[in-house]
Length: 146
Image (tube, one colour):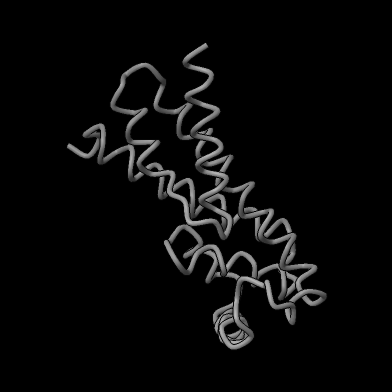
């Protein structure tokens, strides 16, 4: 039962961290890796799945953002959204390789939705970026690099 709750907690942390919520999943992943109670590959799969699904939520929100961008409660200023759109237009879908980064990664996934990035290319690039981040973190934590 405890193992299942660990996976569930990691999934929720990874999902939340990929949205515009101020959360982190790296500490949860490292903590679970260090317990030796979980298979590393299972943790990587759960963290990646949760993080990618959170980014998919951002992409979906971006697809419908035009209806809400002028609302007072909207979490991103008009100027920042315009700047992000210009950057995305300049660098294109490959900017999604930075979707794993703090601060800029989550807005990038929203802007990809606004810019109507095709879902399958979005999913492929974001999954690659986020899985690589977690893999490097696990490798550093568990000493896989030597």
